[in-house]
Length: 164
Ligand SMILES: [Fe+2]
Image (tube, rainbow, N blue to C red):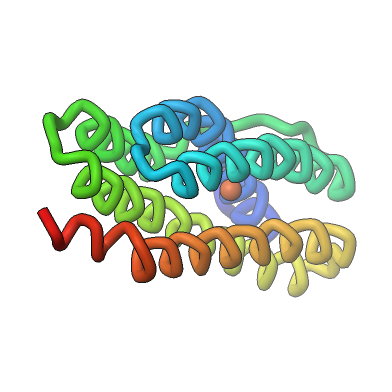
């Protein structure tokens, strides 16, 4: 697709993010299964449900701007998930693996926070108020997930890993 306008760019980025979220829906159950810390495990499970909802919310965004919900392979998310997969396969001390899983998950969240932040700004410039509202909701969820991961790392996972 030729990127002639900001609208084209917005749509292109939206399709990238739809791919990213769909990839994450497949990856999160594996992250949850690999986590030893029960709070981390349930955190991944909770974020899986949130992510499924974020896929639906993205589809709503396509709808409100009158476009077809089509995904375009997000290569960045493929790479981040591949790295997460390497951690899952690693023969590691459980507490150390948990610390690594949090690091991988936070890289994903930071990617998403950057992407949604940009989309919120562009939606605003394009006058798509409904899209701004929807995308902002997801941005808020991603930030909250990132904060929870930081808190869990600082209060229990990193100290447990440091004892090994
Ligand atoms: Fe997400």
